[in-house]
Image 1 (tube, rainbow, N blue to C red):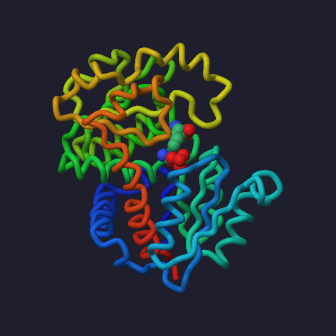
Image 2: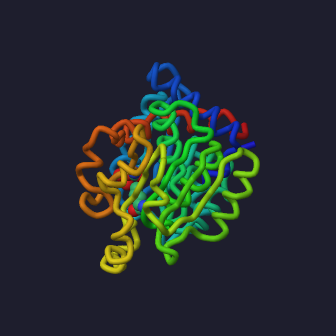
Length: 309
Ligand code: CP
Ligand code: NVA
């Protein structure tokens, strides 16, 4: 049956682990898998800006023997003139998979419901599951087994990244803490979904407003921009409201002494994180950015294997 990755809990714990195992294999032997030989084409559509996602999908699809077709929504009929499901019905006759960075999660759901090829969420307002596969791969490389590790996210708890850490982190059996002001706490339905998944894996999700309590003993310290794409008009309010959740050298001293720092990038240095942290010895953000390539290749190989004939 065709599978899609629209949100992090679309993958079971076993499936998530299987994709991470495959990503590690592909990282060791980068050109070993030609799942897109032909070449088959993968459409990669952007409604929002991107550096890492665009490059890692284009390079990864080529590594797999395929051909990336990068589409800007501004120059296409999607995003105004044509619905996601009609677009999907056109694309599925010609491409092996559709990757889409967009605003509303509902658009991705409509796209996936309208097609027999896999649809991948390359970031929506609600989730960023491809980033989480790369982040979990990075944490595994630096800290070993994911189960039982404590990961603290600081900042905008309603962001796509916070929601994805909640779902993907507990799927991996981690203890996820989200540190944010109460007005920026994660959406209730996402927390409920994370709680349900945590009951299966032994992980947990905890919402905290005290950044010191949230940092204490954390194995992984994470933040993300305070001003996600689409939230630019709220910039000043967000700088005011989220200032107490900046990751500073002091945050890292409260965390576990062997804690690592990750950030999906791009970073607003001096806002959500100080340069001393992102450039410091505990930061693994460049490994994390590279791992987008390996994790997404593994995801595409896994999805193509499940695709309807
Ligand atoms: N982390 C991430 O998705 O980066 P881009 O916005 O550059 O793709
Ligand atoms: N939360 C950020 C992530 C960017 C990769 C945004 O949506 O802009």
